[in-house]
Length: 166
Image (cartoon, rainbow, N blue to C red; front, top):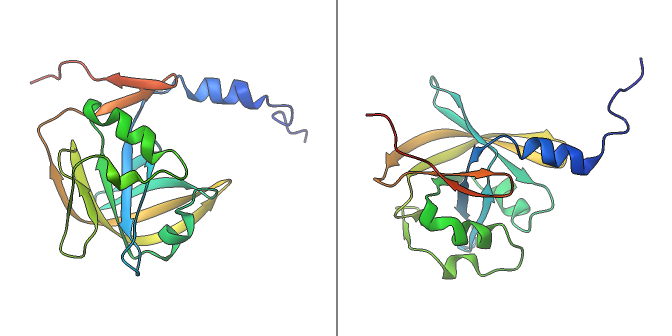
């Protein structure tokens, strides 16, 4: 059987994926040494209600990759329109990411984005290889919502959500 995708143009693939709006998250953790780490992810989803599981995808080339592979816990912060610039910082290598934004800390010292649309605290359940990424599956231990609306990523830019239904 011939692989019908062997000639797939990477630019065409990225363009096709850009047609799918997705939420934006900033995922954070604290290393055993106490250093804060984080990354921006638009590949985030609910996986299961019972048990409560979510998944988020991390690029293997990310500076924080080894830290998240060793971390026992991580936090998913769902980004609002006010966090667009912060999300760009967290998607950039070499930035002092935590110098921006307003973070608070849980009892274990994990950074939480205080004005996020939602904050979901997780224990790492499993890390599953997925091409050039790894899929972090987290068991949710705590979740809270804020009053601001989340923002979406669409066609390479941030797109605020419109009015929601009552």
